[in-house]
Length: 333
Image (cartoon, rainbow, N blue to C red):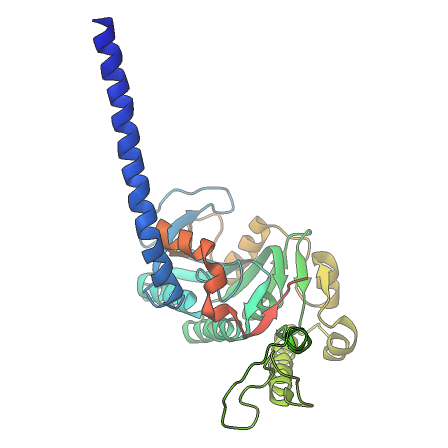
């Protein structure tokens, strides 16, 4: 009988490992398919669903309240702008849902931007800024920003949509600048190994900055002009919204440097560099004419993706076609 029990045990173990190996085999069989679809699709082709979260109020309460309770809507500007979880499409979807669920019912009284980002693409940063400004003006709703970590480059661009910007004292602020590149030229390496390359084009400078031939003088002139244009637009938007920040000093002295939050407030980048989340929320409640002692709700709206797509996004991010050859408002020391 003892031998029989041992045989059953060994058989069960063997069956378990067979089943485990089968599941593992199916996973690795579908992995190339997922790899293919990720590599051949854009980052934001599919509709983005939103996740609704209840955040603590000033007193730390997270209890779900009645549907007619005043609400502060929190939008997280966290991570690199232009990536899958934070781009013009995800923010557009979030704002559309906010309008449908809370603006039209007059429940939403203010929007808090919770910021921790190094910035990102020029296109997405500018689009998000313009959408927020339009939203604020159309629905007469105050927008404030709280920085908890990093508000650099494109993050500062987006933050300028807020009427008031506050930050924790250890946050880093600034990096007003733009970049495009880097570009590499491997002509000498190819010549050394006797390798030649041919690109067939029509149109002057169609293959500008081609890395496999010597670069001609001023062939990057149009790209420099675009980069200068987006830089000037960045500067103009910042100084238009940050009244205490000197445009002359920003261009000639501060440049694309970053500063601690206290120094940034002193220079005019933000309003308060020694704040906290609770204080920023209190100030927004005041601007929205909401009594902090009366019931209100802090509702977060985030882009939601499934586990598999997020896994593929992380593993194959080097294949993201939208991340190459773009103009950036990005702090990347």
